[in-house]
Structure formats: structure tokens, C-alpha cells
Image (cartoon, rainbow, N blue to C red; front, side, top):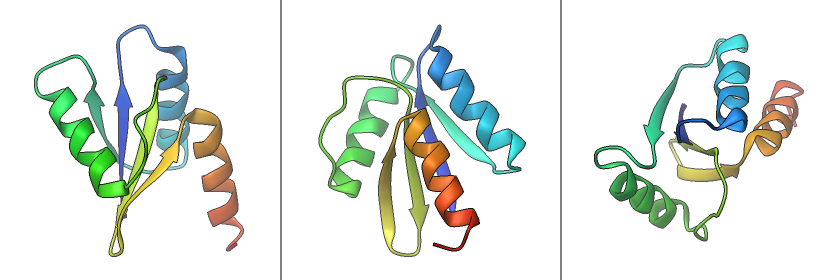
Length: 88
């Protein structure tokens, strides 16, 4: 399972999400929405996950054997990790 965190400079929620993943020992790929091919990468993630475009950052995507799942922002990531830590 791998994680992608869509970020931008100056985003405190982005820092919080990356910190949470690091504290949990989870490696992740960071994609800056506004640098390089970030917009194209994000468009592809949204299509793969079947999710709707978003209006805030961070946005976290999980890649596993079943495909790509859009988790949401930092709060949703915290809940997702909590649920999966408890074996739910």
C-alpha cells in the first residue's frame, strides 16, 4: 500500500498530514499541485479513484491491489489510519 499526498506551499494541513504519516512510519509520495506536472498527476489520481475534484489541500490517495482510493484531507486521513489500525 502506498500513499500520495497532494500539497502546496504554505499549507498547514499539508504539513500536518505529512507529519502524521511520518510519525506512523508510513512512506508517501508528495505531489505539489502547482509545480511541474502536479496538475496532470492529480487529474489522473482523481480519475483513477473515481472521486470528484476537490477545492482544498491536502488530499490523500491510497494505492493498493484494488486500485486508488481517495481518502480526503488531513482529518479524514487521521480517521482512516485510526480505523485501519483497529482492524476495522
